[in-house]
Image (cartoon, rainbow, N blue to C red):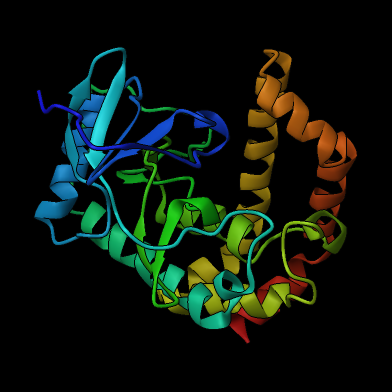
Length: 269
């Protein structure tokens, strides 16, 4: 097992790994997911199919942790800076996701492995989707999305599901009140949804379905938060209270339904 001799630097983990991710030189050590071995095999297979924009597994460490290669660059953290919300940045996220899916389509799903269902496509699928391409999980270089990290929520699903989950964060698919405090003001959600779809190269049939799948993904995300809160997870209990409680979720879902036709017109126009 490789010795960790470099100076330790705490990295900003997501809500699920808050305070538990550390960098040691060229390596990152973080909590290992339950399916670490299957997930590591998937990451290695992605590289074998030409996708070099994800961490490479180095091995499992003691006390339930894993080691991955560190990917240099910038990661946007809330409140999200303007450089991460440019149209060029958004289009590059779509292109990066398409590259991930093209490589992932060639990787056979290990049906014997356990895959998390928390954020997974309820309809399932024949390829593995990332399911959490949020701003905190994309590494930028020179203003463009260069890599994606944190594959803990990978599970079988439709590529369109991954596009919808990505749109939730990057457009964002939030009403203006909910977006305030995290995103710059004045973002044109329909136009940005079109930019993401164009960057990805989404075909017309999927464009017509995307607004409805975003609504479905929002329901799944709300249920995920509800399970965490019911289980007493202090991070999610605090975040729910600070962000407006369940009224915020009601407002987001109503706003998505009210603007469904507007989003569809922007995607197909």
